[in-house]
Image 1 (tube, rainbow, N blue to C red):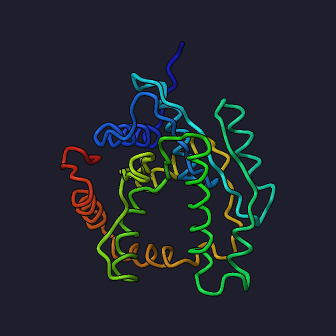
Image 2 (tube, one colour):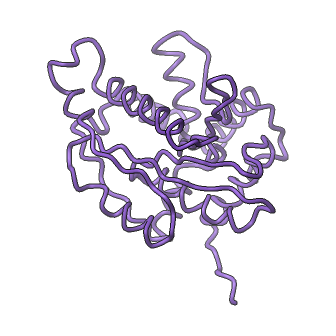
Image 3 (cartoon, helix red, strand yellow):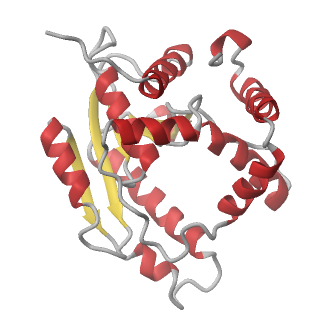
Length: 249
């Protein structure tokens, strides 16, 4: 059998994900990983990478996609369902009203994005218990680590970023972020090269969130490549204990 040749971006996604998972012992034999699949580039790339990691690691782990359709377009998840069926990956897909409710008078005290994200996260945690999953994986990337740190500091006065691996419910569940070392632009290229069927976010608040605002302002601050690299590495060292040799060259 001829081994598939990966592009540079695809190799970065698979290799850096593997490095972070191994360094932090994210999963072990018998792990049952639920992937929070939104239909965007990050979570779709995470599914593709973990599917490939299953063939590389010397132990068995299971994958299951968890998709909560926010309710703006009841049929938007069709490409995900087809992709999962084609690759033999289990999935739970359900339609909710989180999105419309978040933008309605029902939500009087929270921002639409906060409300919707909170409801989605609660449901995802419930699904991990229902399916006996040991891990919940999110597609947050290196850029998300930086923007979350500054968003927390500027919005709430807390010095806090994103954990790559975090335990919940007395150790029953581990939340993991395997793409934490991969930059957004690399994920974007790899997703297109793998021809992943991502779809546009139909939410009316898409691109108007505080996170998006922080990311836009940071893009001005990190126009110099070295500044962006050093910012990410500093935050990653502080949060995870990784060393210089753990970062992409």
